[in-house]
Length: 197
Image (cartoon, rainbow, N blue to C red; front, top):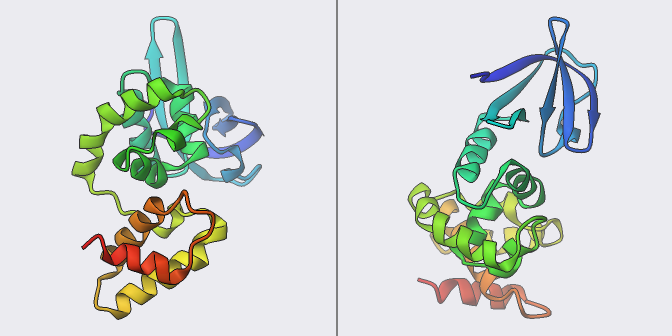
């Protein structure tokens, strides 16, 4: 198995890059081609070699945890490499794990290649596995326009004595609970997070 490639990115398109390793060009399918800079050497791309009777393809990632997450996804019934890349591109590992744990069918079914039927199946297959991982529901999983708002809520809970991790979990869960409201005040967010004790 090819675990990683180290070389120069010669070209990139939407969803793929070509990596020059000692004069050999490897076509690598990636979730984000813009994560890799052209003509800067050396770059390390962590890879997964996908082998089937009718297809051999190389998939690449900017870090090992992203690659490991890809492996989990493609081992899940109904998720092939293309859908797995869409999950990583559209939501990222942390946000997707959070959506599965919250059984957010609507959010998951917005990913290209996933309908509501497959979303339900994915939740059924992955919820217990993700619960065991206890993913760090980091602030990076929050939409950009809400990050400052969420940070303020986290700091408020930390001031009440919660650890950073506990505060993040409570605020993010509260945000998910209130997601259907048109507008949320910081007071409402904090109150909802404390109701989850």
